[in-house]
Length: 216
Ligand code: SAH
Image 1 (cartoon, rainbow, N blue to C red):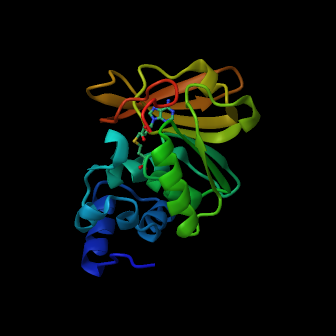
Image 2: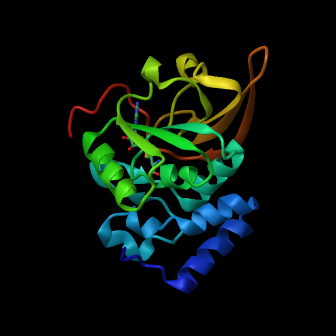
Image 3: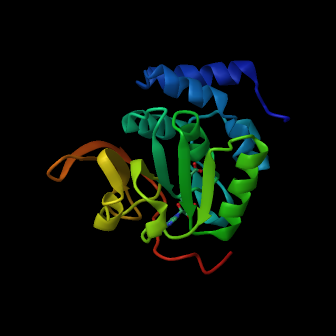
């Protein structure tokens, strides 16, 4: 697989994640393993290892690497976990998650993005990721319970129906706040009696919108 594995660039990439406080070795290794240059638009390959969000098809974005690493670290993944992602986009976050758990289900409302991510992930050998065309506000009941849920699009609030998809002691992370401005990452932990809620850092995500996208 031709990949821009420019060593100095990749070394700087790892270094900047460490400097910004990512310390989980397994997360750093996953970030090192997944070739971000294969998930960005071909014209952006030279910028793939800069710590910036980049545009992808359908007016969406691939998140900034620091935010991907930070959210992944905050999930506290274990090898046995079944993970749900809302907002497949390029499939990059799903690929990073897949290195650290047993199975990832990722849902995307644009058919073009879902199809591209599915074939890219298959081509790169991420065979424990399932890409579904669907609406993250309406996850099919048959999908079952998840140990971890990560939402990578901004929501005004976390839908109760989504939080209810967490298994015992499950963790959900989502950017919560105004759709077109700055949101706060919220971490929900399922307890015996309900949910514990903690606010993490400020972030900026594209909005989560209900229903399948009308355009392709
Ligand atoms: N995690 C992605 C980036 C996500 S950008 C990556 O690693 O590249 C946010 C994505 O969420 C967009 O692709 C957008 O179309 C999708 N999205 C927005 N609302 C959604 C919804 N209700 N259900 C599923 N996907 C949604």
